[in-house]
Amino acid sequence: MQQRLFTSSAAVAKYYKVTLKRSTIGLSQDYRAAAKTLGLVRLHQTTYQPVNPSTAGLILKLKELVHVENVASIPTKEQLLAAKPERGYKVINNIL
Image 1 (cartoon, rainbow, N blue to C red):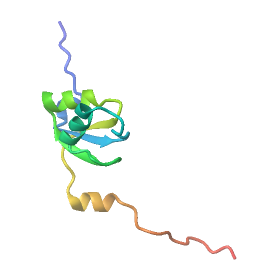
Image 2: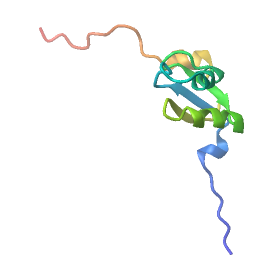
Image 3: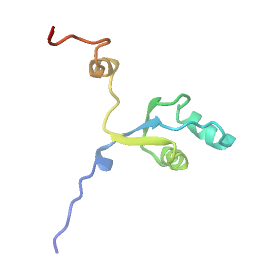
């Protein structure tokens, strides 16, 4: 019998990257508390949470409000700043 080995991103991932995409305004206190427990207060705020059953339960409760990705490590501040585009704009060609 041939044995299959599955390699998925969930097996390698150590953290959830959780981003709040919809507001908790108008929801009950338990939903707001779940979002605050995950560290999500503002829209489009991102936090990194460890992969464990309690975190997965909170994410499952807020599944319509959050966007979740599996990541292997938490990026450093330098990596986050390097990924940001520069402010303003640049003139590439002057047609005039």
